[in-house]
Length: 252
Ligand code: HPA
Image 1 (cartoon, rainbow, N blue to C red):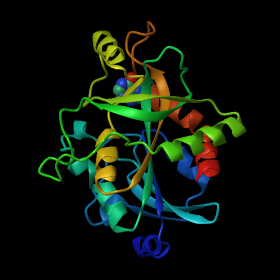
Image 2: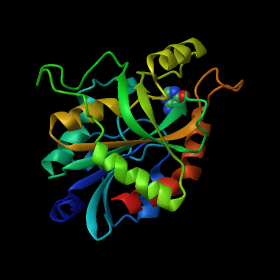
Image 3: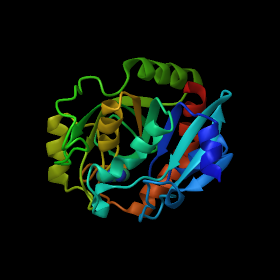
Image 4: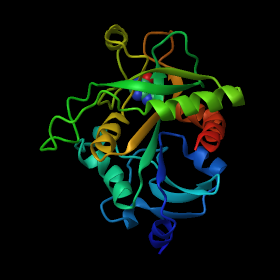
């Protein structure tokens, strides 16, 4: 079965693809794939725009594991449950993971359709995947500075706009109110989304190197007069995926 093929390739790098970012996998070229339902420990996503499969690709001759689609706490899962994929990756020998997501832009210097490299996060989920232990894990450098420098250098060389900023994770499933976005901005958030933070915490606790990239699919609530729409978030994610794929190809 194809999980064996993925295992045999011994990928040390993984990429988690967020909402509507499945096109990144197409652009990277998928060699073999296996639905989450066939991977012990994983379960299928319930959200449109989230494929729910592990795939293998090669970047610069090196095997890279792709997780297409992720589980979210708004599906009714715990922070521990939504990070099962990270633990599976670790058990497959993965040492570093790029977490991608669709996010709302809070920083008004950013633009919709652009990318933001996550420098740090605000965990506003009220939950941690580490509840029950291990306790007191250091979180002062979650997003690898060395890896970030590499992404910035490649983005510059490719002429791709790559902002840097703080990602705030909110439980959802509803989008935020304008007042909540003002609060998040006051707290130091540059972008907002409903994922990534539990995975980043879990990956760090397992000793993995972490990078995070947000695709800014919309303005956060209240910044522009429009309302928020999931279908639009997915569409913008799809059309801007090509830049993300190019950047990943160059940086990995
Ligand atoms: N808020 C929360 N999550 C999101 C958003 C947003 O504006 N856009 C994409 N995911």
